[in-house]
Image (cartoon, rainbow, N blue to C red; front, side, top):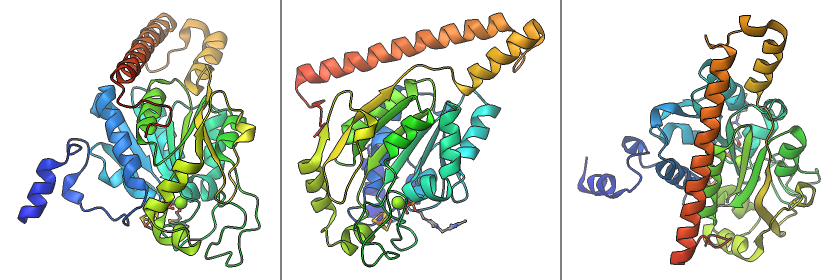
Length: 330
Ligand SMILES: Cc1ncc(C[n+]2csc(CCOP(=O)(O)OP(=O)(O)O)c2C)c(N)n1
Ligand code: SF4
Ligand SMILES: [Mg+2]
Protein backbone atom coordinates (compact mmCIF):
# COMPACT_ATOMS: atom_id res chain seq x y z
CA UNK A 1 0.00 0.00 0.00
CA UNK A 2 1.46 3.39 -0.88
CA UNK A 3 1.00 6.56 1.12
CA UNK A 4 -1.83 7.82 -1.07
CA UNK A 5 -3.81 4.65 -0.57
CA UNK A 6 -3.33 4.96 3.14
CA UNK A 7 -4.41 8.59 3.27
CA UNK A 8 -7.47 7.82 1.17
CA UNK A 9 -8.50 4.95 3.39
CA UNK A 10 -8.01 6.79 6.62
CA UNK A 11 -9.84 9.89 5.49
CA UNK A 12 -12.91 8.48 3.80
CA UNK A 13 -15.89 9.26 6.06
CA UNK A 14 -17.71 6.32 4.48
CA UNK A 15 -14.99 3.75 5.11
CA UNK A 16 -17.22 2.00 7.63
CA UNK A 17 -19.79 1.29 4.92
CA UNK A 18 -17.60 0.60 1.91
CA UNK A 19 -15.10 -2.10 1.02
CA UNK A 20 -12.16 0.24 0.84
CA UNK A 21 -9.84 -2.60 -0.15
CA UNK A 22 -11.68 -2.64 -3.49
CA UNK A 23 -11.00 1.04 -4.22
CA UNK A 24 -10.47 2.72 -6.59
CA UNK A 25 -13.84 1.86 -8.09
CA UNK A 26 -14.42 1.28 -11.79
CA UNK A 27 -16.74 4.22 -12.46
CA UNK A 28 -15.76 6.98 -14.91
CA UNK A 29 -15.15 10.57 -13.80
CA UNK A 30 -18.47 12.42 -13.47
CA UNK A 31 -20.56 9.22 -13.45
CA UNK A 32 -23.58 9.55 -11.15
CA UNK A 33 -23.46 6.09 -9.61
CA UNK A 34 -20.98 7.05 -6.88
CA UNK A 35 -23.31 9.76 -5.59
CA UNK A 36 -26.04 7.19 -5.13
CA UNK A 37 -23.68 4.89 -3.23
CA UNK A 38 -22.66 7.77 -1.01
CA UNK A 39 -26.28 8.73 -0.34
CA UNK A 40 -27.07 5.10 0.40
CA UNK A 41 -24.18 4.84 2.88
CA UNK A 42 -25.33 8.08 4.48
CA UNK A 43 -28.85 6.68 4.83
CA UNK A 44 -27.52 3.50 6.44
CA UNK A 45 -25.43 5.58 8.83
CA UNK A 46 -28.28 7.89 9.81
CA UNK A 47 -30.86 5.13 10.14
CA UNK A 48 -28.78 3.25 12.66
CA UNK A 49 -29.75 0.05 10.95
CA UNK A 50 -28.19 -3.18 12.14
CA UNK A 51 -25.80 -3.83 9.26
CA UNK A 52 -26.11 -7.56 9.84
CA UNK A 53 -29.75 -7.27 8.91
CA UNK A 54 -29.24 -5.37 5.68
CA UNK A 55 -28.44 -6.96 2.33
CA UNK A 56 -27.77 -5.41 -1.06
CA UNK A 57 -28.45 -7.14 -4.35
CA UNK A 58 -27.42 -5.88 -7.79
CA UNK A 59 -27.78 -7.14 -11.33
CA UNK A 60 -25.22 -6.63 -14.08
CA UNK A 61 -23.97 -3.32 -15.42
CA UNK A 62 -21.94 -0.39 -14.15
CA UNK A 63 -24.62 0.14 -11.48
CA UNK A 64 -24.59 -3.58 -10.83
CA UNK A 65 -21.10 -3.15 -9.41
CA UNK A 66 -22.56 -1.40 -6.35
CA UNK A 67 -23.06 -4.74 -4.58
CA UNK A 68 -19.31 -5.30 -4.68
CA UNK A 69 -18.41 -2.03 -2.98
CA UNK A 70 -20.75 -1.93 0.01
CA UNK A 71 -19.50 -3.47 3.23
CA UNK A 72 -22.64 -5.50 3.76
CA UNK A 73 -23.88 -8.94 2.86
CA UNK A 74 -24.33 -8.45 -0.84
CA UNK A 75 -24.97 -10.38 -4.01
CA UNK A 76 -23.89 -9.48 -7.52
CA UNK A 77 -26.37 -11.60 -9.47
CA UNK A 78 -26.90 -12.29 -13.17
CA UNK A 79 -28.31 -9.76 -15.62
CA UNK A 80 -31.90 -8.80 -14.79
CA UNK A 81 -32.22 -11.17 -11.84
CA UNK A 82 -31.55 -8.94 -8.86
CA UNK A 83 -35.23 -8.73 -7.90
CA UNK A 84 -35.94 -12.49 -7.84
CA UNK A 85 -32.80 -13.03 -5.77
CA UNK A 86 -33.84 -10.22 -3.42
CA UNK A 87 -37.32 -11.74 -3.19
CA UNK A 88 -35.82 -15.11 -2.28
CA UNK A 89 -33.67 -13.52 0.42
CA UNK A 90 -36.64 -11.73 1.92
CA UNK A 91 -38.80 -14.86 1.90
CA UNK A 92 -36.06 -16.95 3.47
CA UNK A 93 -35.30 -14.36 6.14
CA UNK A 94 -38.11 -11.83 6.67
CA UNK A 95 -35.98 -10.03 9.29
CA UNK A 96 -33.66 -8.77 6.56
CA UNK A 97 -33.96 -5.39 4.88
CA UNK A 98 -33.24 -6.19 1.28
CA UNK A 99 -32.17 -3.44 -1.10
CA UNK A 100 -31.74 -3.82 -4.84
CA UNK A 101 -29.46 -1.29 -6.55
CA UNK A 102 -29.29 -1.66 -10.31
CA UNK A 103 -29.49 0.09 -13.65
CA UNK A 104 -32.33 1.01 -15.98
CA UNK A 105 -31.30 -1.65 -18.51
CA UNK A 106 -30.97 -4.38 -15.92
CA UNK A 107 -34.18 -3.64 -14.04
CA UNK A 108 -36.48 -2.68 -16.92
CA UNK A 109 -35.03 -4.41 -19.99
CA UNK A 110 -34.11 -8.00 -19.29
CA UNK A 111 -35.43 -7.76 -15.71
CA UNK A 112 -38.67 -5.90 -16.41
CA UNK A 113 -40.93 -8.85 -15.78
CA UNK A 114 -39.47 -9.36 -12.31
CA UNK A 115 -39.96 -5.72 -11.45
CA UNK A 116 -43.64 -5.65 -12.35
CA UNK A 117 -44.46 -8.79 -10.39
CA UNK A 118 -42.53 -7.82 -7.27
CA UNK A 119 -44.38 -4.49 -7.30
CA UNK A 120 -47.70 -6.23 -7.94
CA UNK A 121 -47.12 -8.48 -4.91
CA UNK A 122 -46.04 -5.54 -2.76
CA UNK A 123 -42.93 -7.52 -1.90
CA UNK A 124 -41.29 -5.83 1.07
CA UNK A 125 -38.01 -4.78 -0.60
CA UNK A 126 -36.41 -1.50 -1.65
CA UNK A 127 -35.43 -1.04 -5.30
CA UNK A 128 -33.11 1.82 -6.25
CA UNK A 129 -32.64 2.35 -9.99
CA UNK A 130 -29.80 4.47 -11.31
CA UNK A 131 -31.42 5.63 -14.54
CA UNK A 132 -28.77 6.94 -16.93
CA UNK A 133 -30.92 6.21 -20.01
CA UNK A 134 -28.37 3.78 -21.38
CA UNK A 135 -26.66 0.42 -21.16
CA UNK A 136 -23.48 1.96 -19.81
CA UNK A 137 -21.39 -1.11 -19.31
CA UNK A 138 -21.89 -2.56 -22.78
CA UNK A 139 -21.34 0.51 -24.93
CA UNK A 140 -24.29 2.87 -24.79
CA UNK A 141 -27.15 0.94 -26.34
CA UNK A 142 -30.80 2.00 -26.09
CA UNK A 143 -32.66 1.05 -22.90
CA UNK A 144 -36.39 1.07 -22.12
CA UNK A 145 -35.97 4.53 -20.58
CA UNK A 146 -33.96 6.31 -23.31
CA UNK A 147 -35.90 9.47 -24.27
CA UNK A 148 -37.14 9.76 -27.83
CA UNK A 149 -34.65 11.33 -30.27
CA UNK A 150 -31.67 10.61 -27.98
CA UNK A 151 -28.75 9.05 -29.74
CA UNK A 152 -27.60 5.59 -28.69
CA UNK A 153 -25.17 3.17 -30.30
CA UNK A 154 -28.17 1.15 -31.52
CA UNK A 155 -30.11 4.22 -32.69
CA UNK A 156 -27.48 6.38 -34.39
CA UNK A 157 -30.22 8.52 -35.98
CA UNK A 158 -32.01 9.06 -32.68
CA UNK A 159 -34.42 6.95 -30.64
CA UNK A 160 -37.87 6.38 -32.15
CA UNK A 161 -39.21 4.06 -29.39
CA UNK A 162 -41.54 5.21 -26.61
CA UNK A 163 -39.75 5.03 -23.24
CA UNK A 164 -41.11 3.85 -19.92
CA UNK A 165 -41.78 6.46 -17.30
CA UNK A 166 -40.50 4.50 -14.32
CA UNK A 167 -42.52 6.09 -11.49
CA UNK A 168 -45.71 5.63 -13.52
CA UNK A 169 -44.83 2.01 -14.25
CA UNK A 170 -44.05 1.32 -10.58
CA UNK A 171 -47.25 3.02 -9.43
CA UNK A 172 -49.41 1.20 -11.96
CA UNK A 173 -47.90 -2.15 -10.96
CA UNK A 174 -48.70 -1.65 -7.28
CA UNK A 175 -45.56 -0.19 -5.66
CA UNK A 176 -46.50 1.46 -2.37
CA UNK A 177 -43.58 3.92 -2.16
CA UNK A 178 -42.37 5.71 -5.30
CA UNK A 179 -39.90 8.59 -5.54
CA UNK A 180 -37.60 10.17 -8.08
CA UNK A 181 -34.53 12.38 -7.65
CA UNK A 182 -31.48 13.26 -9.68
CA UNK A 183 -27.88 12.65 -8.64
CA UNK A 184 -27.62 16.37 -7.86
CA UNK A 185 -30.12 15.90 -5.05
CA UNK A 186 -27.98 13.78 -2.79
CA UNK A 187 -29.69 14.75 0.48
CA UNK A 188 -33.11 13.99 -0.95
CA UNK A 189 -31.90 10.59 -2.09
CA UNK A 190 -30.63 9.86 1.42
CA UNK A 191 -33.90 10.95 2.95
CA UNK A 192 -35.90 8.89 0.48
CA UNK A 193 -33.81 5.80 1.18
CA UNK A 194 -34.40 6.27 4.89
CA UNK A 195 -38.12 6.58 4.28
CA UNK A 196 -38.04 3.48 2.12
CA UNK A 197 -36.16 1.56 4.87
CA UNK A 198 -38.99 2.53 7.14
CA UNK A 199 -41.76 1.76 4.67
CA UNK A 200 -43.61 -1.53 4.70
CA UNK A 201 -43.99 -2.79 1.14
CA UNK A 202 -42.44 -2.42 -2.29
CA UNK A 203 -40.45 0.82 -2.44
CA UNK A 204 -39.04 2.22 -5.63
CA UNK A 205 -36.57 5.10 -5.91
CA UNK A 206 -35.43 6.30 -9.32
CA UNK A 207 -32.28 8.40 -9.50
CA UNK A 208 -31.62 10.14 -12.81
CA UNK A 209 -27.84 10.18 -13.13
CA UNK A 210 -25.34 10.89 -15.89
CA UNK A 211 -23.43 8.31 -17.87
CA UNK A 212 -20.74 10.75 -18.91
CA UNK A 213 -18.72 8.44 -21.12
CA UNK A 214 -21.53 7.21 -23.33
CA UNK A 215 -24.88 8.97 -23.04
CA UNK A 216 -23.52 12.46 -22.39
CA UNK A 217 -20.77 12.22 -24.97
CA UNK A 218 -22.80 10.55 -27.71
CA UNK A 219 -25.50 13.21 -27.32
CA UNK A 220 -22.96 16.04 -27.11
CA UNK A 221 -24.24 17.03 -23.68
CA UNK A 222 -20.90 17.81 -22.10
CA UNK A 223 -19.42 16.33 -18.95
CA UNK A 224 -20.68 15.44 -15.49
CA UNK A 225 -20.84 19.05 -14.42
CA UNK A 226 -22.98 19.92 -17.46
CA UNK A 227 -25.35 17.13 -16.44
CA UNK A 228 -25.61 18.55 -12.91
CA UNK A 229 -26.29 22.00 -14.39
CA UNK A 230 -29.07 20.52 -16.48
CA UNK A 231 -30.58 18.96 -13.34
CA UNK A 232 -30.23 22.25 -11.52
CA UNK A 233 -32.07 24.09 -14.27
CA UNK A 234 -34.68 21.53 -15.21
CA UNK A 235 -35.42 19.34 -12.20
CA UNK A 236 -38.32 20.54 -10.16
CA UNK A 237 -39.68 19.11 -6.97
CA UNK A 238 -43.41 19.00 -6.50
CA UNK A 239 -45.93 17.85 -3.94
CA UNK A 240 -48.52 15.20 -4.74
CA UNK A 241 -47.58 14.96 -8.40
CA UNK A 242 -49.58 12.39 -10.34
CA UNK A 243 -47.22 9.73 -11.73
CA UNK A 244 -49.04 10.00 -15.08
CA UNK A 245 -47.43 13.42 -15.46
CA UNK A 246 -43.77 12.63 -14.89
CA UNK A 247 -42.58 11.34 -18.28
CA UNK A 248 -39.18 12.61 -19.44
CA UNK A 249 -38.40 13.86 -22.94
CA UNK A 250 -34.90 14.46 -24.25
CA UNK A 251 -33.30 17.13 -21.99
CA UNK A 252 -36.77 18.17 -20.84
CA UNK A 253 -38.00 19.23 -17.44
CA UNK A 254 -37.64 16.48 -14.80
CA UNK A 255 -40.42 16.30 -12.25
CA UNK A 256 -39.25 14.76 -9.02
CA UNK A 257 -40.34 14.15 -5.45
CA UNK A 258 -42.06 11.48 -3.46
CA UNK A 259 -44.99 10.56 -5.67
CA UNK A 260 -46.56 7.63 -3.83
CA UNK A 261 -46.73 6.48 -0.22
CA UNK A 262 -49.60 4.21 0.69
CA UNK A 263 -50.39 1.42 3.09
CA UNK A 264 -51.30 -1.95 1.69
CA UNK A 265 -50.69 -5.47 3.03
CA UNK A 266 -47.33 -6.80 1.90
CA UNK A 267 -46.91 -10.15 0.19
CA UNK A 268 -46.17 -11.74 3.56
CA UNK A 269 -49.17 -10.21 5.24
CA UNK A 270 -51.42 -11.33 2.41
CA UNK A 271 -50.06 -14.89 2.64
CA UNK A 272 -50.52 -14.92 6.39
CA UNK A 273 -54.02 -13.56 6.29
CA UNK A 274 -55.18 -16.00 3.65
CA UNK A 275 -53.72 -19.10 5.26
CA UNK A 276 -54.73 -18.09 8.77
CA UNK A 277 -58.29 -17.58 7.56
CA UNK A 278 -58.39 -21.02 6.01
CA UNK A 279 -56.29 -23.02 8.49
CA UNK A 280 -56.88 -21.10 11.71
CA UNK A 281 -54.36 -21.54 14.50
CA UNK A 282 -52.90 -24.65 12.84
CA UNK A 283 -51.18 -22.30 10.47
CA UNK A 284 -47.74 -21.34 11.69
CA UNK A 285 -45.36 -19.33 9.56
CA UNK A 286 -41.76 -19.60 10.73
CA UNK A 287 -43.02 -21.31 13.88
CA UNK A 288 -45.18 -18.37 14.94
CA UNK A 289 -48.80 -18.64 15.94
CA UNK A 290 -51.32 -15.99 14.90
CA UNK A 291 -51.18 -14.05 18.22
CA UNK A 292 -47.38 -14.08 18.04
CA UNK A 293 -47.45 -12.76 14.51
CA UNK A 294 -49.91 -10.07 15.51
CA UNK A 295 -47.71 -9.07 18.43
CA UNK A 296 -44.68 -8.89 16.14
CA UNK A 297 -46.62 -6.77 13.61
CA UNK A 298 -47.66 -4.43 16.42
CA UNK A 299 -44.06 -3.99 17.58
CA UNK A 300 -42.89 -3.36 14.05
CA UNK A 301 -45.59 -0.73 13.50
CA UNK A 302 -44.49 1.03 16.71
CA UNK A 303 -40.89 0.99 15.54
CA UNK A 304 -41.89 2.49 12.19
CA UNK A 305 -43.75 5.31 13.93
CA UNK A 306 -40.71 5.95 16.12
CA UNK A 307 -38.38 6.06 13.10
CA UNK A 308 -40.73 8.36 11.20
CA UNK A 309 -40.81 10.74 14.18
CA UNK A 310 -36.99 10.72 14.23
CA UNK A 311 -36.87 11.50 10.51
CA UNK A 312 -39.27 14.40 10.95
CA UNK A 313 -37.41 15.67 13.99
CA UNK A 314 -34.15 15.68 12.09
CA UNK A 315 -35.72 17.44 9.13
CA UNK A 316 -37.09 20.13 11.41
CA UNK A 317 -33.70 20.52 13.09
CA UNK A 318 -31.91 20.89 9.75
CA UNK A 319 -34.47 23.40 8.59
CA UNK A 320 -34.03 25.38 11.79
CA UNK A 321 -30.26 25.34 11.32
CA UNK A 322 -30.88 26.36 7.72
CA UNK A 323 -28.29 23.93 6.40
CA UNK A 324 -30.45 22.76 3.64
CA UNK A 325 -33.19 20.27 3.68
CA UNK A 326 -34.64 22.73 1.21
CA UNK A 327 -36.84 20.90 -1.23
CA UNK A 328 -34.10 20.60 -3.80
CA UNK A 329 -31.49 19.63 -1.26
CA UNK A 330 -28.74 21.56 -3.01
C1 LIG B 1 -27.93 -12.42 -20.17
C2 LIG B 1 -27.06 -11.22 -20.46
N1 LIG B 1 -27.37 -10.44 -21.51
C3 LIG B 1 -26.63 -9.35 -21.76
C4 LIG B 1 -25.57 -9.03 -20.97
C5 LIG B 1 -24.73 -7.83 -21.30
N2 LIG B 1 -24.95 -6.72 -20.42
C6 LIG B 1 -24.17 -6.50 -19.33
S1 LIG B 1 -24.53 -5.09 -18.53
C7 LIG B 1 -25.74 -4.71 -19.65
C8 LIG B 1 -26.51 -3.44 -19.58
C9 LIG B 1 -26.56 -2.78 -18.25
O1 LIG B 1 -27.25 -1.57 -18.35
P1 LIG B 1 -27.83 -0.86 -17.07
O2 LIG B 1 -28.55 -1.84 -16.24
O3 LIG B 1 -28.59 0.32 -17.52
O4 LIG B 1 -26.53 -0.49 -16.25
P2 LIG B 1 -25.47 0.68 -16.44
O5 LIG B 1 -24.25 0.02 -17.00
O6 LIG B 1 -26.04 1.71 -17.36
O7 LIG B 1 -25.28 1.20 -15.06
C10 LIG B 1 -25.86 -5.71 -20.61
C11 LIG B 1 -26.80 -5.67 -21.75
C12 LIG B 1 -25.29 -9.87 -19.87
N3 LIG B 1 -24.28 -9.61 -19.02
N4 LIG B 1 -26.04 -10.95 -19.65
S1 SF4 C 1 -19.74 3.91 -18.71
FE1 SF4 C 1 -21.26 5.40 -18.04
S2 SF4 C 1 -22.45 4.37 -16.42
FE2 SF4 C 1 -20.54 3.21 -16.73
S3 SF4 C 1 -19.13 4.02 -15.19
FE3 SF4 C 1 -18.77 5.14 -17.11
S4 SF4 C 1 -20.06 6.96 -16.93
FE4 SF4 C 1 -20.80 5.49 -15.40
MG1 LIG D 1 -28.11 2.32 -17.43
